[in-house]
Image (cartoon, rainbow, N blue to C red):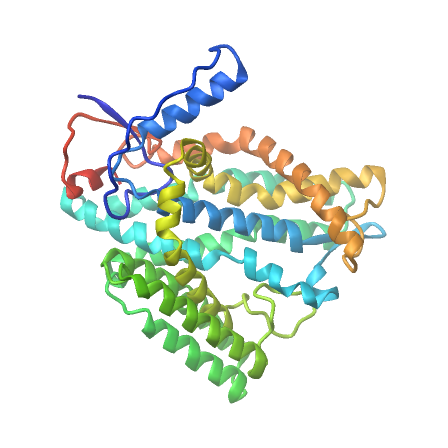
Length: 428
């Protein structure tokens, strides 16, 4: 019997879930919008195999959307004469630091990435695929859509410079537009090292981060030493993802231990060790928790990973609802496009808005609650422009997802039912 399965921007991950009971379907007129939406939602739900751990996809979607909303809320482009410069409401309203705690979700993404990559590599070995074949398939999903972003911004930068825009403005725009690429480089390096990292205890890279910060901040060591944490810091949640794959985080108390230990350590570091309260970089601050990662950012990420593990069962239950699952699946199918182009959507809106003058929440200094209120009103506009970018550039992500010689990762066809877990993972 032929069965179509959804592979939403990732791998089959996690333990089997019970068969879904048949649900009554409400009738809808076939030609109406509601009918189309209902059929799409039902198709996505029915196409998802019962062995898929939907909580993994939900965590990935939340992590991506957290990064996007965080950037849209704390990144301001202030019009200063004929120049655009970067500013942040966190620099003017330090009491807004908790916003960065809610939306700096990269640790969760790295944990999910470590989980799915280690499962994928094990599945590739079971199929008899070599390391090069496996890695080419993984990296093509990351870097395929990047070419379009680089091409567009290369052309845009040249046009702006030739049109008389200041170098400061062009540098600001290009830096923000390409800022997501640093994440991809680190993520790609960890992915390439997955066979060697699959057994690494996350305590080892955590110890590296601790010693680097002791040398930097406690002993007056060179600032460049902090860049060691760029790999070691993100290896901690990536290693937690590998430990999840090994079954070491399935115990109910594992998430609680990580959340409590990470939260207490972060609070102590901020309160008594002088680390910034904001978990993102703030213009003008001498120390950034994220650029490069500090011990406080890493312990905060550990707490986030613990919270994510604690939420797994609730997410699995929530994802049995077809509408919720359809939303998560669609975000995962567009994850790279959303991640790469969300800053471009912000800047396109800002640049276009200059035609109408200095608009509140868009070009003004982010130094008060009026700016916050205005910025919240701009979020739907950013989302609409991002939707335009998605329409224009999502085809590059689809093409990358279908590379690697294994067919599209969106829909694949299987010829057998009742497969073992190892067999089910072959289409990871």
